[in-house]
Image (cartoon, rainbow over all chains, first blue to last red):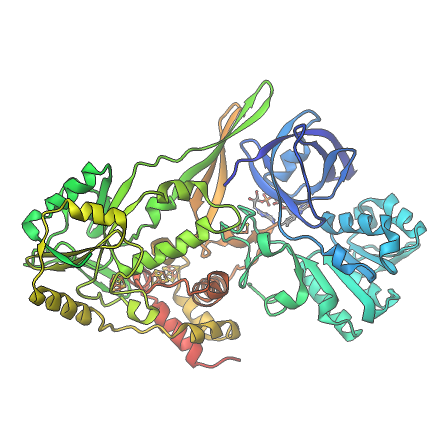
Length: 269
Length: 365
Ligand SMILES: Cc1cc2nc3c(=O)[nH]c(=O)nc-3n(C[C@H](O)[C@H](O)[C@H](O)COP(=O)(O)OP(=O)(O)OC[C@H]3O[C@@H](n4cnc5c(N)ncnc54)[C@H](O)[C@@H]3O)c2cc1C
Ligand code: SF4
Ligand code: SF4
Ligand code: SF4
Ligand code: FES
């Protein structure tokens, strides 16, 4: 297993409490080529390594949006600019955006830190002419959990349909639906015959969304999802991330749904 | 090279030849009531007369009057712990004034010769090679230890009650992947080379022409070893385990299984590992350690505050379905080489052949 590369934290931006975007500088002259939906293994000295999706590349810096979950991510977010961490990657299969040109795009995300899909949204919005209609559904528990609030408005101004749902909100808000993200699907005005769905979030949400989409006539072939498992190596060696015959780290994390259909959404797989 | 004869009293010459060629000799030895692989000085340390009585949930050594050194079939380990270490440092991190410096750990790699390797273990070695050397990134640590190992295989003269390599196609004859192969008879060994390096070692041994009677005796005992009690279903059949994920037998086996992971640690093909970072108290230095892991551990499938395979039935199912079925999709063959170790070393005598058959015969729902 190759050792990590030392990268430097340039900016640590709090998006919402507990979720930060880390802006990382790679060593000078180090090439870094990636696809949206791929991930890196980030290493905090003496603490451990975690898989984190690549959120983007901006001003020569690599962006990772990280939620404080536990052992590694909490102290990772406490790092000050100038600190160093380790990075291995990019690893895994990303979204097949090139293959989806000309299609309408439906993004379904739920929960926090859905970075792999946000990167793809940003790309699609900035290359509007390559795609048909773009519709973005995001579900959260509370409205304040919504990451990148100004961006949602900007995307809307750029002609995307943006639908938001909050499941544990007590009071209805403007533009918000109370409930689960799947309840927004009937409002998404998309052509099921020429649409690609890019999903990321808790498996139970994606499972429910797939059912609803199927009932709307969406073919399985239109669906792509990003999965999460325990990653120790990120390169298909440690065996931790297996889903049936697949290693999520190297065959995924983005899968074409027909490939994993028999394994996805089953208890204990 | 045709098979030639090495009388038993000249076995020391093989040790000498290997040592002269620069190898550390690793072979079977009796330790803690089991056959283990360990560094050996000479043939006097071989487990002369010892053989195992292995059954589901039990493994005992018995001393016989025979002088044979390879009458046993398996011990709890194959070659796995020598190449894929139970515990090792992958890389080190060091905080300096100019930032963190990462350094890959260079594995120790004294050339080793292994004596007494069986057909099942050679098949397992080929599987581990494929996993560790032909993946996305070849594993430098495995590779360094793997390079240059010398293998003296032995054709099995009998089978343990737990062996079922005939049905997996991996034994009892060692067919490929060795430098030398031995057939052991009471009076000595038939020796055959399987590689140029093996031929070079054989050329330096005091070999004699083997008589037809000895060939016949070797063939006869190999025939005897082919009579085995267990028969694993064919791979095409095992592939159907993926259609039986909801079978009630998973719950039944889970009621016995302790999720101790013994079956995975003795299995010569299991490759799961976890990593941990060991830091010093000043936060200036750390080592990234890789440790064997098992899909039977709860933490194995931990994801962000949840465990995917919390129930033992899901963990047993993960193991069996992976080993026998999905492994075929990943590596082109089943992950079981028929050595029977997991059957003998399971504290509650769970037998994977019996479980696989019950699940397949019970039909699927
Ligand atoms: C492909 C992929 C992309 C991800 N992208 C992001 C992202 O962009 N932003 C983000 O905030 N989070 C992301 N995650 C989740 C993130 O990896 C976990 O939140 C993180 O590993 C938790 O580590 P921890 O030590 O802080 O938490 P703890 O709960 O204390 O976890 C303990 C240990 O579990 C192990 N572990 C390995 N993989 C995971 C996993 N997937 N989930 C939980 N634990 C794991 C790690 O060794 C970790 O140190 C992603 C996960 C995957 C698999
Ligand atoms: S599954 Fe059991 S019998 Fe098969 S190779 Fe592993 S230990 Fe041997
Ligand atoms: S499984 Fe076959 S090759 Fe392995 S020890 Fe038993 S008889 Fe020999
Ligand atoms: S099958 Fe046996 S050896 Fe394997 S985990 Fe269960 S109790 Fe332990
Ligand atoms: S994370 Fe190790 S095999 Fe996928």
